[in-house]
Amino acid sequence: MIALDEALAIVAGVATPLGTETIGLEHAAGRVLAAPVRARIDGPRFDVSTMDGYAVRESDFAARPCSLRVIGEAFPGAPFAGAVASGTCVRIFTGAALPSGSDRVVMQEIVRREGDQALFEEPQDSLFVRRKASDFGVGDVLVAEGRALDARSLVAAAAADLSHVDVVRRPRLLIVGTGDELVLPGEAAATPAAIPESISLGLAALAAEAGAEIVGRRMLPDDLATMQAAMTESLGLADVVVVTGGASVGARDFAKNMFGDLDILFSKVAIKPGKPVWLGRTDDALVVGLPGNPTSALVTARLLLRPLLDGLGGRPPTLAWRRAVLAGPMEQGGDRETFWRGQAVDGKVVLVPNQDSGAQKTLAEADLLVRQAVGQAALAAGSAVDVLDF
Image (cartoon, rainbow, N blue to C red):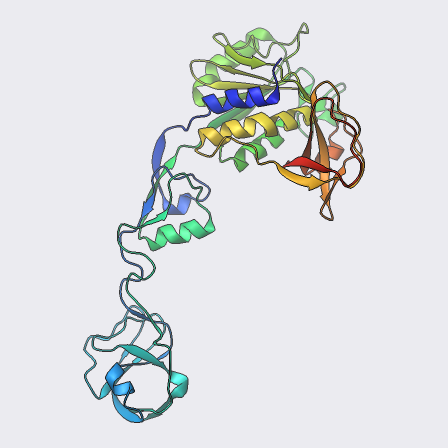
């Protein structure tokens, strides 16, 4: 049995990014860049008006009051084709290219129009012009390699005139629930001694948050031959296989034996809940074994599966702990590192009432894991603790 930090170090060692692929920008939300986004064009591509008004020569406007002949219009996507000579101006709208020969835009609110003449009398400090390449130039890096594309970075990538981006391949995940007692949700009420298979749905949601692709969710009976046949058929489909249950030493615990060439990287971690968690590797995939109790499975998945998927998908394989304040007391720590389930309430941490490893009602209520060291002294309300979003 090893400590959590040792297990996390092993996870980080195998959680190296998978291969890369090129995808359309419209499919890239949440994907991690395998190469930086570099601009193919200037931004803006030309001097642009930032105001509705009139494009004029600075020398004409400086001689106010003046009357200038309006010789045309400039719209976004439909620029004025000619040039602004002395004594003339062009009606211009926000986002339009500044016509050749003009230096500034005078806002329409201070211009008086009489037929084809525009009268300029009032002063104006701002030029209302956004200069060519003032935001970025050709070749500039707009989004760095390793960043997960979000709403803001997708805007920048599109502005760079990219239709496709190079990204890290998503890890493919196969989720396998084991146990003769498991049935699909909705079928347990009609089947004596059955329980709904609930863990795989939670694991799939957690994995999706890490950008993983779920290639399958399977339920297998506690029969070694059936389990081995299923894994022989399925292993090539996934980069990671998650097995729930069957990790103990009972007569029907076959989670490890179902893999013929399994290399165990660690088995059992000194944490509560979740001690039976294990990690192995076959020729085709990494295998994560999680406890069969729902809370234990979700806690260990958050602590160990999520960093594994993050690393394989190009994200840092780390846990973002932060400090928070307890709303009430916390009892003394035991002989294993403990992860209490808690809620954030009014800026403080409230421990959920039922901390049983099989609890599912309070599992739904918890949004934090509270870390407690081995043998840590009891804490009073107001004490600071390390927490992780759950």
